[in-house]
Length: 239
Figure 1 (tube, rainbow, N blue to C red):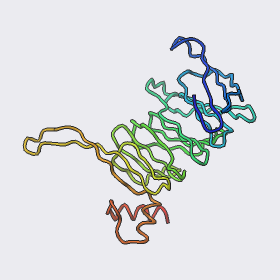
Figure 2 (figure 1 turned 180 degrees about the vertical axis):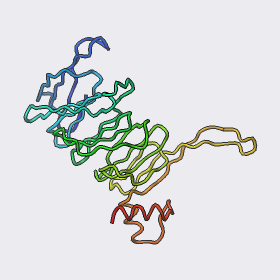
Figure 3 (figure 1 turned 135 degrees about the vertical axis):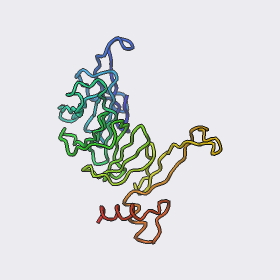
Figure 4 (figure 1 turned 180 degrees about the horizontal axis):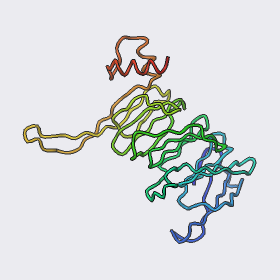
């Protein structure tokens, strides 16, 4: 099920376990009363997301169905380019919703796409990796970040211009979106024998362009990242 403060959506499936992939969806209010029944056949593996205004239910596996719960209508999105290439390793890795109610999708062919809830594609760009794990909006919806299996994290404009590449896997943003933390993996070695001792992790703090810009407008130093080329690059983009 998927739940927000006003309603909950539940997949109702025929059969037991993997015996059947035939499901439909019921939407309940918090008192348990049925608000909507969506009779379109959906996979038991599909994921469910409510829009922030409760008007839409997004259902996805490798395709995305957007149900308008007010007008009882539906649009379908097929975000995968690699499906047309008969690629058996073609998967939709993630779907997220911004505070402005746009969708972002990331797929195994490295494509990142942004959509509105009417199914219109707003932006599409190729990431720097064919091992893409996730793409999402920053908290204010003004930028996109993505990361791959090799712990490369990229920050993008909404049109796909690469702002900067970090070392890290995943990102945890502060609420204002000005700072984020990422986990960085590293190897440790015995310097005498040059042999690998094992893996470790560290939590690294970075600034987004907004945070960096606000910070170095008021001081001549750049906390944690004293890199003038990075600072100049972000300043050029913002100005």
